[in-house]
Length: 140
Image 1 (cartoon, one colour):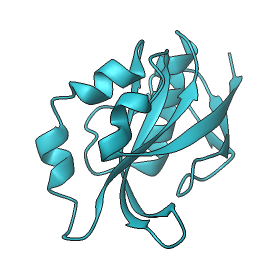
Image 2 (image 1 turned 180 degrees about the vertical axis):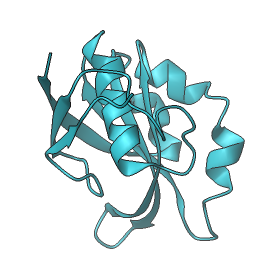
Image 3 (image 1 turned 180 degrees about the horizontal axis):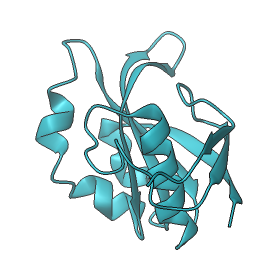
C-alpha cells in the first residue's frame, strides 16, 4: 500500500558535537561541510550517507563507516549530521526511499532497488541537499 512519511530534520551537528545528536529512533544524514566561524553556521557541500537507527546518537558515535566518510572530506572541511525522528517500520522504509532516490556514495543497500510499496517522503527543516517531496515506486 502506498504511504507518505513526513520527516522533520533537526541539526546541523558538527563532528565535534556528534554526542549532542538525539539518542532516539530516526533517520540521520551525513554531510561534508565547512564551518563558517564568522556566521556560526555550516555550509553543506555533499550528502554522503543516509542511515537509520533505534539510537541515532550511539549509531553515529560507533559507526563502522567513519573511515569511508573521512575519504570524502577535503582539507578545511568536516563531517556534520542532521536527524529526523521516526520509528519502525517507517524508519527503514524512509531510509530506503531516500537512499534509492539520492544514491549517496557511502551507501550500498537500496541503491539499485526499493523493496517496499510505493512511498512518498516529505522532508522539511534541516535537510539541505535532499529533494522533497520524493515518491519512490516499488521495484521488482
